[in-house]
Amino acid sequence: EVEVVESGGGLVKPGGSLRLSCAAAGFTFSDYYMNWVRQPPGEGLQWVASISGRSDYRYYADSVRGRFTISRDNDRNSLYLLMNSLRAEDTAVYYCAKFGYLEPLGYWGQGTPVTVSS
Amino acid sequence: NFMLTQPHSVSQSPGKTITISCTRSSGSIASDYVQWYQHRPGAAPTTVIYEDKERPSGVPDRFSGSIDTSSNSASLTISGLRTEDEADYYCQSYDASKWVFGGGTKLTVL
Image 1 (tube, chains in turn cyan, blue):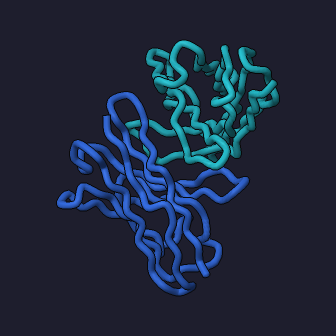
Image 2 (tube, rainbow over the protein chains, first blue to last red; image 1 turned 135 degrees about the vertical axis):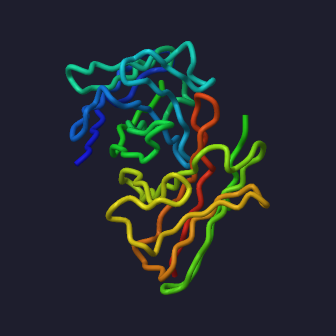
C-alpha cells in the first residue's frame, strides 16, 4: 500500500527558511515523479513543485521559483522541500503527493502546516 | 497556460445524482488526462477518478468521470449520493511541465 507522510512544518518569520520532508513507502520510490502541493487557508489546492525519479527534472510554480528547492534521496525513500525567503502568502498546508504525467493516479499524505508570521 | 473552472458549490439530497463540471479555458480538454480528487477537511486528498474516467480500486462505481470536447469540459458524476460524499472535489490536469488544479467544488449532501 502506497503511503506518504509529511513532516517539518511549523511557524516561521517572514524571510525565514524551513525544510519539509516526506517519507514514502509501498512503491519503488526512485521510479516515480513526486510533488509538493499546498492549500492556503480558505483556498484551493495549488501545485508547488515536481521532481523526476532520478532528479533529472525539477519544475516549479512561478510563485515559488527561485525561493523553493525540491529534492529527493532515493536511498532513504524521502522527498524534501527547502523553502527560503518565506512570505505570509506561503502560509498553507503542504502535501506530498505521488503522481506524474505517465502515472496520474495520485496518492497524497495528510499534509504538514506552515505558518509564516511575525 | 490554461485554467480549470469549477462551480464553487453544489448541493443535492441523499440518493440523488450530482454532476460537477470542470471547464478548460484554452486548448482541448482531450489533450491531457483529467483527474478528480476528493478532499475532506483534515484528511489527505484521495483520487476518485484518474485518466478522465478510470476509477481506482476501492472507489465505488457510484463515481464516474467523462470528458466532453464540445463544451471543452470534464465531469464528475456521483450517483446514489451519501452523506459521506460531502467533501471538496478538485479536478486536475497537466500543462507542459506543470500541474493545474480547478478551484474546487464544495459538495453538500443534505
